[in-house]
Each structure stands twice: as C-alpha cells, then as structure tokens.
Length: 298
Length: 298
Image (cartoon, rainbow over all chains, first blue to last red; front, side, top):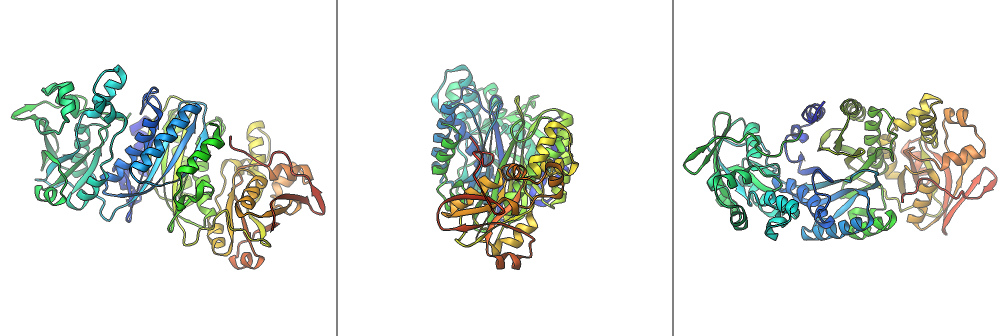
C-alpha cells in the first residue's frame, strides 16, 4: 500500500460531505473550515532551516488552506515534538511572531517527546460564509492567480546552495498566506485552491476535479521582479517556476467581472473549456507539457 | 528549555480565553470544543502493539478529551506518517472500526512520509452547550469517578510481559471514551477532566486548578473485578491503580444530588475542601502520598 493507495483507502473512510472527499484544501462543515498539515524535518523543511522560519511555515501553510476557502482564522492547535532545546526556543519565538502577524489565537495542542526526526503538526480552524471548492470551474471561466509563482522554488535552491536574493529565500521560508485576498475572492469565484505543489499540477487538479480542460499561458504567469532578475525570463525559467512548489499563491476560476468586483489584483493565466486535460502555451507558442508537473506525493 | 519550560512558554502565547491557559483537556471556543493529541511510537504505544489498536487509541484519547467537556464529536482530522505498508493497512482498518464505533466522521488531515519513528496526530472537534473546566470544584463537592481505575496500567504490564486477562489488555489497547457519560454529567458538575496520567496526579491537578484541598479514599476507588482478581485488592494494588495512566475514566467535582440527576453511575472517591494539597486514605487508614502520583511529562 503506497501513499496513493493509502490515501484512496482513507478517502473511502471519509464519506461525510464535509470531508469533500479529501480532495480539497480543507474540510468544510457548515460555516467551519478545518485543515491539518504536517511538516517533517528533511521532507518539508531542511534540517538547517532556521527554527523560527519552520514555525512560520507551519502556520502559514495551514492558513493558506483557510485562505483558499475564503475563511477567517479562528484559532490553531499545535502538535509539537520536542528536541534540541535551543531549537525549541527559537521555534516558539517564530511561532509567536507568526501568530501575531496574522492575529491568530493559539488555542491548544499537544507536546510530545520523540526519539526520531521532528514531525510537527498544526490544525487551523476558520469560519467562512462561502467556501469555494476545488471543483466548480465552468467552461469559459478564466484561470487566475493571486500572488506570484516560482519565488519559493528559487528560494529553496538558494537555501540549498547558499547564494541569491534574500527576498526569494524569504518567499521559501516565510510564505505569506493570502487571507485577505481569499476572503475578498471567495464570493466571486467558481473554484479556488492554493498553489502548494506547483502551478501546473495544481491547475491540473482543479481542471480534473471540475471535469474540464484548461489552457495555461506561461507568458502570462505572474513572476516577481526578483525571480525574473535572478533566474531569467526565458521559457526554461517559466517552466521551472510553473512546476516549483511552496508558493501559496491562490489559484481560481472566475469570470473577469467576478475578479473585478472582488477588488483583488489577480492575473489571468488561462481558460477553462469543455473537455479534459491541460494544454500549455508560452505566448503564441504551443509548449509540450513537462513530464513532471510539480511535487507529487507518493 | 525542558518540557515544563517549553509548555510554560507556549502557555504565554496562548492568551486567548478559549485556550483555557492550555491547562484543560481541550480548547473551548463558544460552543466548539477542540483537542489535538499525538501518539509517538515507543513513547505512547509499544512498537509491538497491533496497528489497529494504535488507531483506536489515537481516536479514543482525543474523544475522551471531548467527553470530559461534555461534547458531541463533530469530526476528526488525522495527521498520519506512512511507514511499513502492512502496518499502514492495519492502522486504517482499525481507524475505520473506531470511527464507526463512535459514529465520528473523518473530515480531513494530512499524510506524510517520515524517515523516523512514527508520530501520529489527531484533532477532534466537538460541540457542547456547557463545557465544564478542570477548575471549578467547590469546597464540599464530592470527588467522583465514572469508569474504572487501574485496568489500563495492568494491561500495559500484560502487553510488556505477555500474560494476563484479555479484558485488561483490551482496556490498555482499546480504551473507551466515556462520551455518553460526559454529556450526561456536564450540566451537573462543577469541574470535569479525564484521567489520562493517573488518578492521583489528575486529582491533584483538578484541586490545584480549583484552589482547593482534596481527600481521596483508595478503598472507594472503582476497580474492575478483573483487575481485583488479577492484581489483588490490597493497598499496594490500590496504590498501583491510583498512579497508573491511560484509563480515560472521567473525574469530576459535583454534589451527590447533581450526580443523581445526571443518571450516570459514578462512584464517589473523595471530597474537596478549603485549603491546598492532596490527602490520601484507604478506608479508615491515613496513607502517605506516594512520591510518584502518575505519569509526569518532562
């Protein structure tokens, strides 16, 4: 039973409609939105990453799931595995800073000792009057992105290799959950999710969940000035950005009018249409889909 | 920064009233009750414990926290670390069985790969109109127990040594959260918690949180017929039971009239009084407090 098989079996257990088939960013139970994401040392963060940044990321990835459902955070519970004491202390400092930055109350959790690598968990609870699903895009909808794509992937490379602009490293280590944007967008979109595993793979998931085809234009993809200056702006750089993870931008399906009404400055990167599958272009050129669309679990 | 220092620092971050100072079984936010407990291999369960039982326990310990707040479970999120595939499959079977036994929906969670020992987390969400705190006992209140004390401690010894009655082993491996009892009691008690670390240490915590003294009578403590037959019924056996963990009985402070009104068959094991500290007796005899009151974190 590999990871996909395990998740399929878990999905069979999650038959309650609030679970959304475990295929969404979060569970939606009435007006409550719940998510739980874990970070494992060496898997989701580098052993050398500053502990305060790991705390920030643990909160941010969960708040990003709430953002994608248009939810206001009500509070979080932390599952913490103790280890090196200086690391623990620095983690707490970062957690306090991140909780304060997003005005999110720490409500509870558990602290354990473990002999292995650290595994950290965080549960975020939020409230949303309208929580858009991943499924729900309509043929003719635009595919839109709020936030930038590819900064965190470059930041990861910088964390590993040690050279590069600090704002890119920061995008990897201290991602910003787009809570305000998610709330403003939620009433005006047909589908929404956050980009955690890579733009292409996450777009493919939204199209698949919505039973539609989608076309993405790499040239339209929002990339930061720092990313373009550091990694260039040719097709290879765009493809690298479109398949890199950890950006926590918001991806959504909506009409242009809906986006204008939301007031969020989002960028249109594609179009949904009847059919199945993902087509890629780069301005006027048709581009074959890369073999790897992003981070794939399992 | 050892575990108590870490928890003290975490408590300083948890200033929202819903967090109850991280000193309760669960967070209480309006009518929502939230808890997150982790199980770590080799720490909270034995590597040789059947994986289906570990799944049961992961759910049960969290539902027990909801029970102690009189909450109806609304759903759970699971944080799962993949490992050996046969173990994963058996865990899922047990999780499905436990969810069905308590009619609790699986709403979401996260699945990760980790190179170390397994760390598993579960968040339970419940709803309660009245959620009694740990603090709140009044001088003159009886100290009561619903459920039995000491079975799980004997079950742990049996799991380690391999010989003994299956019902005691089952009490350790498949604890029963007292959800029905907790709901019936909640409107009629002044304070309530579950017994997870040992009767004496948990009674001491309730008395401390309530700013009161308490007297416990070992002879009154409810022990199962199986425990008495297996371990005897002398003072040493009673003290062992009173300091063993993992029972998930409910402990509460109430008047006799309150308990009678609740309809729950609970046993009175002591009395709260003005003052501080825990006094122990065994029938007519005064008994010195043992050095170890139960499982102490850190």
